[in-house]
Image (cartoon, rainbow, N blue to C red; front, top):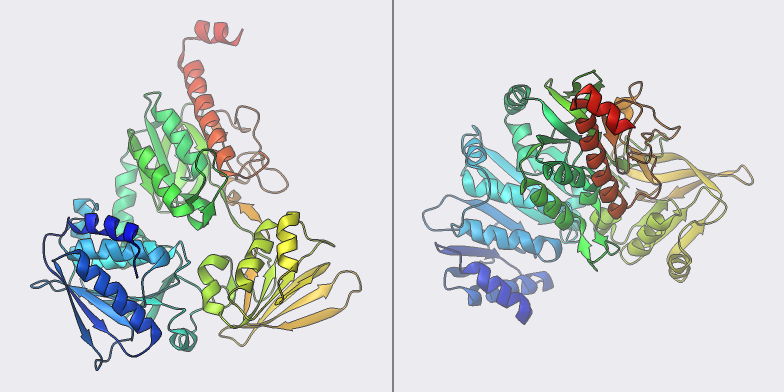
Length: 527
């Protein structure tokens, strides 16, 4: 099951285990059960601390296995074979069940242990989803730390009938005590914020007590991370307030154009960015959404959604962008119920079904190519009279037998039965006729929208809502700079965002020097 190289790496990790691990497998005669049996046999052979037993007659999902340790009250189970992106989740679960401490701060650990209530979580994932491991790993760890928390991680592609019965059409998808808890990427802080309703108020009070910063970065993507590092290296008081550290990179599967790194994945790069920032004296405030910018002569204020206010001498806006929506009837109603934005994450849930991809640029054509290998049929719909993707991608797409391409088509409505998507309506822009497609999924790939709505009326924005910046990253407000995908700088690329973030930080530092120097020095510097 595991190749020799992977076994060697895993064996080294398992040497950190300090207490026995009991794996109880629930199996039947299926091929997937045989695959799981092989995986568990490999695990048992790699460490004397691991013991595997099998059961065929219990009521658990098959195939699945539970992880436990003698004397420990742990309720953690994988339903499916956790390979692909979830193999790391398996390794971490083995270490944590085996007594290896997590990297969580002691205050967070105590907050998890102090949760009052019984929590039975079920998370549906896909092996190709780069967002799912965050949720699986967070809930696994919480179940190790608190015996009143149970967690089952379920491979949606393997348990297709269950997925359809519960109308799970996106991953990660989380149930708590049988009710929908959430969808999309979540880590321990986000989950705790939903469970511990007083945590937001405590965090707001903590933030409100912070001293003013020299540089405050709003946003934690590549631009924000680079800005924070460059500012901190100047020895000035630097803070980062981010709605989710990593930004859009967290939703990126493969990155092959980051110079000097032939291949990496979004979540891996995001983790490296966060660690690099934390290597310096940067005050990182995650899960904080900015709602208002208040310019001032000496201090600039940023008001957060939780009610707290941060003050800084300079501000760097790097709020990034999000997937652009079609804004047609039915889209929002059926979001995560057949309308999806991540083909890598949600594609496996549509195995054998008919789907549409809206958008004929590189992302749309790449999505259609990937989905064609999973689903029954793909219809690609493009507004323009021709596809805009690179020619090499177009050739690949046109070679696929289960793909239909429709150009000069305007999507006008997403149809559904109240619970899930059943079709899509588009208008032929050439002839004006309206057509209906019967399908079960719609993947929207029509570009990005800058996260700048909260800045309207404060800084100058372009017609597209992008922050207008000059060659130094300066905005229309003195002391306020901007960088990355939220700005008018062309070509939304990670490497460009990092360069722009670095430049904005250097510009902010230059601004601080000029505005804090005596008047006669400022005059000389300006000469």
